[in-house]
Length: 264
Image 1 (tube, rainbow, N blue to C red):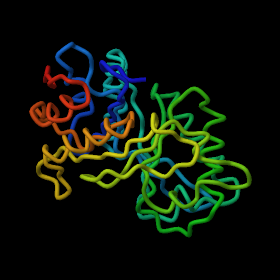
Image 2: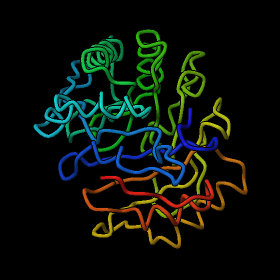
Image 3: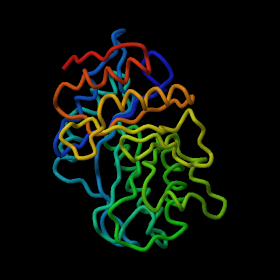
Image 4: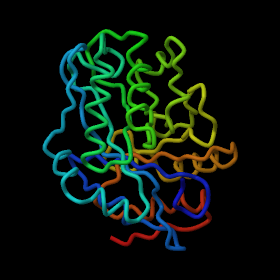
């Protein structure tokens, strides 16, 4: 589904507490095609208890959803996903019990449809409940039934990495993508059912002020490994409001043979 000039899909997370989602559309390759194919709003939360989860938006996520940025990015061919993250409460992607997986999937599908999103991304962190083997597969199965044509992706981290199947349900058969979660490393997610075309083994943190910042030389090396090993997705995290085209060019020249142009 790449909008760029070859088949490598660029996925970009934006920390909406500090940066504007619309920036994802401000980067193109020299041929005019968009650098990024998928933008992810980071992040909404799963709040509540394991039997009564609640989808929660903080003020900046709410503002982003209502800002018009989603439609503007989609007009450029960029898909927009909503990331779901734990919030130091019992409810979590892998802690749901009873009919809670189906209930939370319904909340998510309603949000996707209401805000015109292209799908949902799952990040299994910061939940305090007890992990069980059925929660994540049942959640994914129910959500896939409710949004059959939307994207479901998996930030490969946390307890969910170890609960990918239950009673014949295999998460990798139902989701579209999974990405490495450790910035500055090359580590293909182990998701049975997903092939190289749908996995991002490389992950980079673009923000130079972040503790987990990935130097541009490392980002270029990770891009080369992605090409050499025939993977088709590359993950960028924390695009800021500043012009990052010099950094991004280090990657795009490897992936696409073109520099990145900032149009913002």
